[in-house]
Image (cartoon, rainbow, N blue to C red):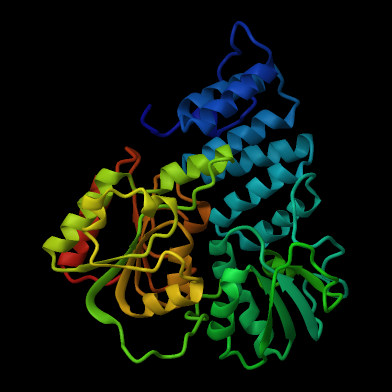
Length: 408
C-alpha cells in the first residue's frame, strides 16, 4: 500500500486542473476505477484517477464527490469541502450532501453540517424507521413543541452520541417518546431516568405504528433544529450506583469495530478501525507488564474467533449475550476503558467513564484532526495513527501514558 502522504497542490486547489486525462478509457471508467481504489484504501492512486476523470468530463458531479471522499480520508477536510461544493453546483444529490456534511463536522462548522445532513432524508434507497413528514409544527430555530416522538437512526454509537440533544428538551419540560432497538431500551430507561421530564422508551417494531405525537423525526436530526454545538456536559447516561465502585487497575478492552462485510464501505471501515491480532497481543502483554487486569468487552464474531492463547490473556469477560445495560454496569466497574472507534467508546463517553480511543489515520471527521481531546466527551483521550498507518506506535504511546500514570 502506498504511504498516504500529502497530495500535491493540484489536488487541494482547483479540481478542474488536475493531471492530464489518461490516453484511454472514458470518464465513467476512470470514475469507477477511482472509486474502486478508494474502497481498496489506496487514496493517493484514487486521487490521481479521479482527477483524470474530472479532466475527461469536468461537468459531471460524480468524480468531484468521489474526490471529496478521498480527500476526507487524507484528512484534507478543506479540500474535500471544495470538491463537494463543486459537485453540489453541478448536480445536487443527497448522498453527496450527506458525505459533505460529515466533512463540515470535521471543520467544526456544525450549523452548516447538520442542515446539509438533512439531505439524506430525500435520498432514494436511504431507509428510515419512519416515513415523513418530519417535525410538523417545529420550524428550524423555533422552540420545540410540547410533545415529540424521536427514533434512533444508523449505528448504536450515533445513538449514544446524539442522546445529548434530548437533555435540554427534557429540561424545558418537553414530553418525549424515544424509540430505540430492543437491546438499548433497558439502558435508556435506567440511564435517562435522572432527567426532570421523564422520557418514554419504546421498543422499535418491524412494522412501526403511527407515531404517538405528530411532531416526529430522527434523533440525528435534532441538532438541525437550532442547537448545533455539541454539548459536552457528560455524563448524560447516568446509571444508578452499584454496590461495588470502579476497581483499581482493571481496564476493559474493545478491539474491533462493527462487522458489516456485506457493505464494502463498512467492511473497509471495519478493517481500518479494528486492531489486528499482533496489535491486540502487544496491548495485552503491555498491560499485563503494567499490572493491569484486562477485561474483554468485545461482543460478536471477533471475540468468538480468538484463539485460546489470546482469550486466556483476559482475566474476565463481559457475557456474550449481555445487553447494553449490563455492559453499562461493567463499564462503571472499570477504572478505564480502551476501545477502537465503535459503540463501546461512545457508551463509555456518554456514561462519563475514562476512555482511551484508538483511531486510524483516516478517522471519522467527528474526531477532528491532530487532537488528543474531543468536544464530544471530556472523559476521553484520543490516540491516533500517523500517516504510516501503523498500530504499534499507537499502542506504545498508550502504554507509556499509562505507565506514567496519565488518565484519559
